[in-house]
Figure (tube, rainbow, N blue to C red):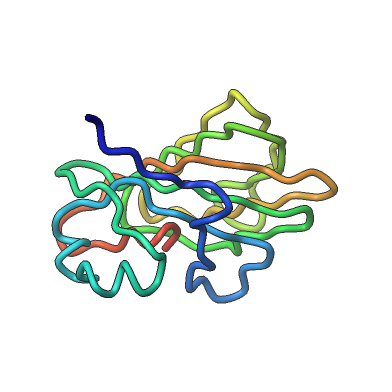
Length: 143
């Protein structure tokens, strides 16, 4: 029988992202280094479950409520930002970069060490991130 993990609203938690508003997350897959850093007991206490532990990228489900904000930040690793429901806005490259609307069915590459941000207005947005974290990196959902 296959092991099934949920990543919907019943298991999402608020990630420790300074300045975030209306943001919740649920890790689906964590690399072994992240699992070792957080530990099964810590993950169970924080999220009520332990995600799949696999070598490779971290995969995280994010939810932005209406008016939700992922504040501008950078990450030391590449992130693929895949919108699976709703729509929102994002900017890659700092405050002077072009703002782009993103919708369900679209994916965006966020390069390492480049400022990026995402937000919603009157529509929520669900996203899956695929984070190519190197050993010792951070994959708590967002940097």
